[in-house]
Image (spheres, rainbow, N blue to C red):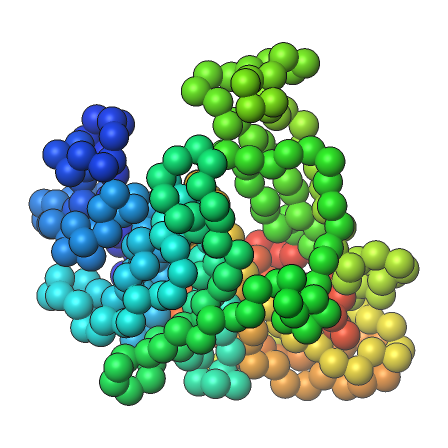
Length: 339
């Protein structure tokens, strides 16, 4: 959270059937920055309503300090101080989006271009709790700051209907990445893929379970298109920041120097926090594009001024990575602390 506290939600009392309410823990609590509890657990009506699809709710800190919270099909903006819902949103059309029919949620990149207003994209899910439920291929982005009815969902057409428009097909792997798999953006701009353990206990290859899968120990690296086909040669290099400790609400900002090709036309400075990963969720994940001044097209040596994040609601304290992105190609990231 913006004050370095930690919001902890949901869980199971015993790991048994979540369709039986007495097994569940639809509560939340807050830990201070030093790990001590601020108060006891509080029952959360959003999670009570969502049972049995209440575990691993999608959570995103918004720029007004409230916590966007989504479970099953329902969502709200929770006021942490009062423990009350400040806004409620219409249910997202489609099936159940959260665990055990886990879909995915992402806070889309933030910038001053729209006054740091958040937009959240939720995709996937399943029709019912079972090992083979029909999945939901739809997505819904939410604008969270509109006047009553306090935001809206605008469902995206299914990817198969919009190929080449909203969605494009990337590289494929022949390794099944199922339960407990993960994808992580690395400092060099590539993505690490690891894991897959769809079994109660590890199944060591070449053996497989009745579904035909085993525990996966191989790790892969995905090279996105912005680094393929010679694009890597266009990387900004020799990146140097005047400080590795970035302050929010700073009018002075920081200086950043880097080298680029003489035909470079545009620069963006991305500030990225990877969050905390489990069950297809990157809790706390966010990316900001910071305001930058002084870029000179045609110069191979650049010295720019970058303004820091506007508030701790937009960039909660913690470790981040700064990427210099020139004409869509990122530098190797630099680790910084935002406080």
